[in-house]
Length: 271
Image 1: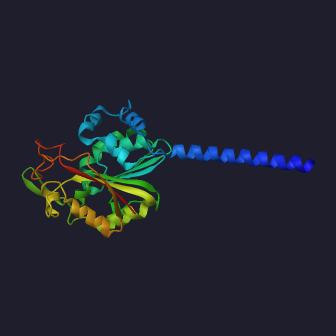
Image 2: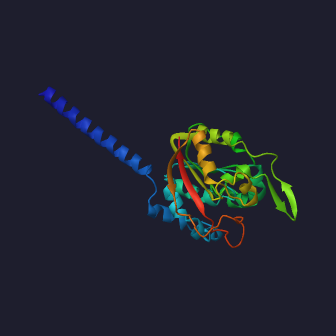
């Protein structure tokens, strides 16, 4: 009788244990699920979001970009060439208090963006954001295999942006183009094995090379795909949310007639 009782108790304990484990797995899976449309909309309509940011939603379609990136609660996101932090803020809200966002700007982007990113993060306004100010991508201090999403919006061409016209004078911003191999090696180092890299940028004419980065702030997408392939990444997916066949690709992206409505590509790469 005692043997029967002990056996029954063991079975009950095992059943309860399995049920508890299943419940834990269920909770864990739920916590790590990709944000759905409702959750993304909550991020976009947050009362804390600056009104100036919201005005750019129609042109940038963040609801589609966040879904394409597959952002999850508690993710770690590396926002490269983050500028004033427009996407940094969205990712900060999306990953929640258990997540982390790095906002990186190198010396060139920092010149133009420092006031905006400082204002956005003033008084620890985005507590899960760590700024990496005025530092090259290849020198960032981010742990290996820790990043779920590496993100670069409208700035891959800036790796090859070296000079600009200012007040009628040619101003040199860099002595040479950035070493893209070192950049991609760094991204690969910090990215988790199942992490993704999202690249959004303005289309340039095929064969335009690096000159388009200086003259028009654009880049030939074949350069991006070639360089990522060479670095050992795989092109997982392409999205077409930001295409505009009316863009002739001849104008600077800052030209008033096309600004905010350029023809843009969106790539997702994995290791």
